[in-house]
Image 1 (tube, helix red, strand yellow):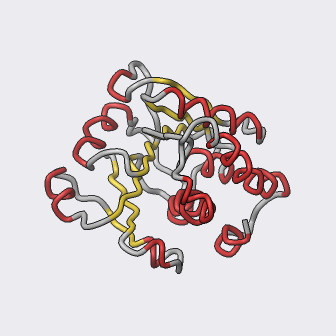
Image 2: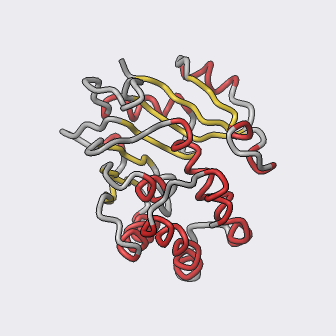
Length: 210
Protein backbone atom coordinates (compact mmCIF):
# COMPACT_ATOMS: atom_id res chain seq x y z
CA UNK A 1 0.00 0.00 0.00
CA UNK A 2 2.89 2.35 0.74
CA UNK A 3 4.06 1.90 -2.84
CA UNK A 4 0.74 3.21 -4.17
CA UNK A 5 0.95 6.25 -1.92
CA UNK A 6 4.45 6.96 -3.20
CA UNK A 7 2.92 7.97 -6.52
CA UNK A 8 -0.67 8.90 -5.60
CA UNK A 9 -1.47 10.91 -2.48
CA UNK A 10 -4.94 12.43 -2.82
CA UNK A 11 -6.94 9.55 -1.38
CA UNK A 12 -9.89 9.59 0.99
CA UNK A 13 -9.81 7.35 4.07
CA UNK A 14 -12.28 5.06 2.30
CA UNK A 15 -10.04 4.69 -0.74
CA UNK A 16 -7.01 3.94 1.43
CA UNK A 17 -8.98 1.25 3.26
CA UNK A 18 -10.18 -0.24 -0.05
CA UNK A 19 -6.69 -0.43 -1.52
CA UNK A 20 -5.30 -1.82 1.75
CA UNK A 21 -7.91 -4.59 1.81
CA UNK A 22 -7.15 -5.88 -1.70
CA UNK A 23 -4.14 -8.09 -1.02
CA UNK A 24 -5.69 -10.24 1.71
CA UNK A 25 -8.88 -10.63 -0.33
CA UNK A 26 -6.96 -11.77 -3.39
CA UNK A 27 -4.80 -14.13 -1.33
CA UNK A 28 -7.94 -15.74 0.10
CA UNK A 29 -9.71 -16.02 -3.24
CA UNK A 30 -6.58 -17.25 -4.98
CA UNK A 31 -6.58 -20.31 -2.74
CA UNK A 32 -9.97 -21.25 -4.24
CA UNK A 33 -9.66 -19.95 -7.80
CA UNK A 34 -6.27 -19.25 -9.33
CA UNK A 35 -6.58 -15.76 -10.78
CA UNK A 36 -3.09 -14.45 -10.00
CA UNK A 37 0.22 -16.29 -10.18
CA UNK A 38 1.12 -17.19 -6.61
CA UNK A 39 4.69 -15.95 -7.09
CA UNK A 40 3.21 -12.54 -7.91
CA UNK A 41 1.53 -12.19 -4.54
CA UNK A 42 4.72 -10.97 -2.88
CA UNK A 43 4.70 -8.04 -5.29
CA UNK A 44 0.93 -7.74 -5.53
CA UNK A 45 0.70 -3.96 -5.23
CA UNK A 46 3.49 -3.32 -7.73
CA UNK A 47 2.63 -5.95 -10.34
CA UNK A 48 -1.14 -5.56 -10.32
CA UNK A 49 -2.45 -2.48 -8.52
CA UNK A 50 0.22 0.07 -9.45
CA UNK A 51 0.44 -1.36 -12.97
CA UNK A 52 -3.31 -0.80 -13.36
CA UNK A 53 -2.99 2.73 -12.03
CA UNK A 54 -0.57 3.69 -14.79
CA UNK A 55 -3.78 4.56 -16.63
CA UNK A 56 -4.76 6.96 -13.85
CA UNK A 57 -1.36 8.65 -14.09
CA UNK A 58 -2.20 9.82 -17.62
CA UNK A 59 -6.01 9.90 -17.80
CA UNK A 60 -8.68 11.48 -15.64
CA UNK A 61 -12.03 9.69 -15.55
CA UNK A 62 -14.92 11.86 -14.43
CA UNK A 63 -18.43 11.61 -13.01
CA UNK A 64 -20.78 9.29 -14.87
CA UNK A 65 -18.24 8.33 -17.54
CA UNK A 66 -18.81 4.77 -18.76
CA UNK A 67 -15.63 2.66 -18.79
CA UNK A 68 -15.46 -0.99 -19.84
CA UNK A 69 -12.63 -3.27 -18.73
CA UNK A 70 -12.27 -5.82 -21.53
CA UNK A 71 -10.96 -9.21 -20.39
CA UNK A 72 -10.72 -8.11 -16.77
CA UNK A 73 -9.67 -11.52 -15.42
CA UNK A 74 -9.68 -11.18 -11.65
CA UNK A 75 -10.34 -7.45 -11.85
CA UNK A 76 -7.36 -5.62 -13.33
CA UNK A 77 -7.16 -2.80 -14.25
CA UNK A 78 -10.86 -2.28 -13.48
CA UNK A 79 -10.96 -2.64 -9.69
CA UNK A 80 -8.00 -0.32 -8.89
CA UNK A 81 -9.40 2.24 -11.34
CA UNK A 82 -12.88 1.98 -9.81
CA UNK A 83 -11.36 2.73 -6.41
CA UNK A 84 -9.41 5.65 -7.86
CA UNK A 85 -12.42 7.15 -9.65
CA UNK A 86 -15.48 6.47 -7.46
CA UNK A 87 -17.83 8.64 -9.56
CA UNK A 88 -16.99 6.85 -12.82
CA UNK A 89 -19.04 3.81 -13.84
CA UNK A 90 -16.97 0.70 -14.58
CA UNK A 91 -18.26 -2.40 -16.35
CA UNK A 92 -15.95 -5.43 -16.13
CA UNK A 93 -16.29 -8.04 -18.86
CA UNK A 94 -14.67 -11.45 -19.25
CA UNK A 95 -15.41 -14.71 -21.02
CA UNK A 96 -14.17 -16.78 -18.05
CA UNK A 97 -16.89 -16.72 -15.43
CA UNK A 98 -14.88 -18.03 -12.46
CA UNK A 99 -12.41 -15.13 -12.69
CA UNK A 100 -15.24 -12.66 -13.10
CA UNK A 101 -16.82 -14.07 -9.94
CA UNK A 102 -13.67 -13.22 -7.99
CA UNK A 103 -13.73 -9.65 -9.30
CA UNK A 104 -17.40 -9.27 -8.38
CA UNK A 105 -16.94 -10.71 -4.88
CA UNK A 106 -13.94 -8.49 -4.16
CA UNK A 107 -15.75 -5.40 -5.41
CA UNK A 108 -18.62 -6.22 -3.07
CA UNK A 109 -16.29 -6.91 -0.15
CA UNK A 110 -14.67 -3.46 -0.38
CA UNK A 111 -17.95 -1.66 -1.01
CA UNK A 112 -17.47 -0.54 -4.61
CA UNK A 113 -20.77 0.99 -5.75
CA UNK A 114 -19.57 2.02 -9.21
CA UNK A 115 -18.70 -1.37 -10.68
CA UNK A 116 -20.71 -4.03 -12.52
CA UNK A 117 -19.61 -7.30 -14.13
CA UNK A 118 -20.83 -9.31 -17.11
CA UNK A 119 -19.91 -12.79 -18.31
CA UNK A 120 -19.74 -12.19 -22.05
CA UNK A 121 -17.36 -11.84 -24.97
CA UNK A 122 -16.81 -8.28 -26.14
CA UNK A 123 -18.03 -9.06 -29.65
CA UNK A 124 -21.35 -10.26 -28.22
CA UNK A 125 -22.16 -6.98 -26.45
CA UNK A 126 -25.02 -5.28 -28.28
CA UNK A 127 -26.86 -1.98 -27.86
CA UNK A 128 -24.38 -0.49 -25.41
CA UNK A 129 -21.65 2.09 -25.83
CA UNK A 130 -18.80 3.23 -23.58
CA UNK A 131 -16.69 6.36 -23.34
CA UNK A 132 -13.48 4.40 -22.83
CA UNK A 133 -12.40 0.77 -23.01
CA UNK A 134 -9.42 -0.31 -20.89
CA UNK A 135 -7.54 -3.58 -21.07
CA UNK A 136 -4.43 -5.26 -19.72
CA UNK A 137 -2.45 -7.81 -21.78
CA UNK A 138 -5.56 -9.48 -23.22
CA UNK A 139 -4.89 -9.79 -26.95
CA UNK A 140 -2.90 -8.29 -29.84
CA UNK A 141 -3.69 -4.65 -30.49
CA UNK A 142 -5.28 -5.48 -33.85
CA UNK A 143 -7.85 -7.70 -32.15
CA UNK A 144 -8.43 -5.33 -29.26
CA UNK A 145 -9.21 -2.47 -31.61
CA UNK A 146 -11.48 -4.65 -33.76
CA UNK A 147 -13.47 -5.74 -30.72
CA UNK A 148 -13.69 -2.39 -29.00
CA UNK A 149 -14.23 0.07 -31.84
CA UNK A 150 -17.97 -0.78 -32.17
CA UNK A 151 -18.40 -0.29 -28.41
CA UNK A 152 -16.96 3.21 -28.12
CA UNK A 153 -19.15 6.26 -28.47
CA UNK A 154 -17.47 9.25 -30.04
CA UNK A 155 -19.68 12.07 -28.82
CA UNK A 156 -17.66 12.98 -25.74
CA UNK A 157 -14.15 13.79 -24.62
CA UNK A 158 -12.55 13.14 -21.26
CA UNK A 159 -12.07 15.99 -18.80
CA UNK A 160 -8.51 16.35 -20.05
CA UNK A 161 -9.93 17.11 -23.49
CA UNK A 162 -8.87 13.88 -25.19
CA UNK A 163 -11.31 11.89 -27.30
CA UNK A 164 -12.91 8.66 -26.16
CA UNK A 165 -10.99 5.55 -27.11
CA UNK A 166 -9.05 2.43 -26.15
CA UNK A 167 -6.45 2.51 -23.36
CA UNK A 168 -4.40 -0.64 -22.86
CA UNK A 169 -1.42 -1.92 -20.91
CA UNK A 170 1.09 -4.02 -22.82
CA UNK A 171 4.67 -5.28 -22.60
CA UNK A 172 7.61 -6.26 -24.77
CA UNK A 173 8.59 -5.17 -28.26
CA UNK A 174 5.40 -3.73 -29.73
CA UNK A 175 6.69 -2.57 -33.12
CA UNK A 176 5.26 -5.47 -35.16
CA UNK A 177 2.04 -5.59 -33.15
CA UNK A 178 1.39 -1.88 -33.68
CA UNK A 179 2.22 -2.12 -37.38
CA UNK A 180 -0.13 -5.08 -37.87
CA UNK A 181 -2.93 -3.25 -36.05
CA UNK A 182 -2.95 -0.44 -38.60
CA UNK A 183 -3.38 1.98 -35.66
CA UNK A 184 -1.22 4.88 -34.56
CA UNK A 185 -1.48 4.79 -30.79
CA UNK A 186 0.07 7.22 -28.38
CA UNK A 187 2.62 5.24 -26.34
CA UNK A 188 4.09 5.94 -22.90
CA UNK A 189 6.89 3.98 -21.23
CA UNK A 190 5.59 3.08 -17.77
CA UNK A 191 9.10 3.02 -16.32
CA UNK A 192 9.11 6.79 -16.91
CA UNK A 193 5.89 7.10 -14.92
CA UNK A 194 6.85 4.77 -12.06
CA UNK A 195 10.53 4.34 -11.24
CA UNK A 196 10.33 0.61 -10.53
CA UNK A 197 12.43 -1.98 -12.41
CA UNK A 198 9.34 -4.12 -12.94
CA UNK A 199 8.00 -1.61 -15.48
CA UNK A 200 10.94 -1.88 -17.89
CA UNK A 201 9.52 -2.61 -21.37
CA UNK A 202 5.96 -2.12 -20.17
CA UNK A 203 3.83 0.41 -21.99
CA UNK A 204 0.59 2.36 -21.84
CA UNK A 205 -1.14 2.72 -25.23
CA UNK A 206 -3.99 5.00 -26.21
CA UNK A 207 -5.98 4.96 -29.45
CA UNK A 208 -8.50 7.81 -29.73
CA UNK A 209 -11.86 7.23 -31.38
CA UNK A 210 -12.73 10.36 -33.32
